[in-house]
Image (cartoon, protein in one colour):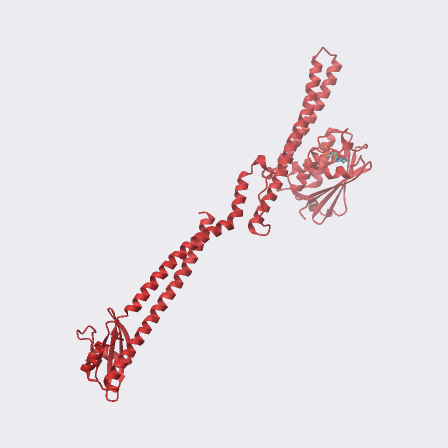
Length: 456
Ligand code: ADP
């Protein structure tokens, strides 16, 4: 069910409850007042008739009957019956004996002195009247035609008012909920129009402070992040294809030139070596691209293994030195490392090894002495690794951008590289709940500071 329909129905339900309750209270209290008023009139009538007969003028009952017959203030269908202490009817305006009198009724009147009850169309009042000589039982009955008519009219008016106000409640509820939900409907319409190709669109924010405004703002923020990540993805793909195309074009060109005529074995050797170089860089790039994809997918990362960080560091050093024999790596363990558990981290070993190897490789690659000093310390349940080199350094402007995919500083262009190593390192360290910070001075060297949480 739509929220608008639900709100309208709730509005209607509460309106109906209030209206019906109010109408019932009005109707039943009016009915009570009518009854009380009519009984009072009956009682007064009974009293005046009895007084006329016994206390005042001591009217002869036959004459009193005649007078009563033509009395203009008689109530509709009025009957007055008076009985003496022997229960003989001594006066009655009810010749057809419509009002039933029996012993138990008379007993009740004598006991309570004043009772009221209903008999068919009659409202009856029974009372005890004490004169100087006797105690009479007086019964007065009549039909409240006027009161019943008034009540029927009131009932009709109340039912009509209920129906009318329920109609009004439904209408007002529908209009009100429609107005209240309009900003929401606008948001839904706008969201429906947003697709991958139109991520630049935003939903309207009518009032920043209300719930729907907040929802729209949150949605817009999400769109902003989505748009940014799509843009990064697009850049990444175009950069990746460019990086892959460059060595492939170079291989293609070299082989085509080679095929133009017969060459000496030295020339073949030289081209094969150059092609091999290009193939190596292609392999490195595709490996890193795969690694980036893997480090972004949480489901394939296994961080449950306890690993000694110094052992991974040795392996990373070995791996880099395998490809570049002239690289020098010095590893020193600081005095804060007093327990072997200080070196244990929970990690995905191949990913951490790749990240450390990349930092070592960069430090050695961008330094004329091809060497890096690595210092390990244990601070606040974290292992800190500082990689210091005396290389070309990074300018402040470049430092802001070196974690972006495929970014290479201008002073690094002459060195081989892909520009996605540090993005990969950053991604891996973050996945392991660690931090990476780089400080550098142009022409003097670079320090890469990595912190990873340890077991203790
Ligand atoms: P690359 O394959 O180019 O080394 P990275 O992503 O590993 O790519 O590094 C990005 C850029 O950061 C490099 O191109 C280089 O400009 C700079 N850089 C990284 N490490 C160092 C370092 N130790 N010394 C100087 N520059 C560095």
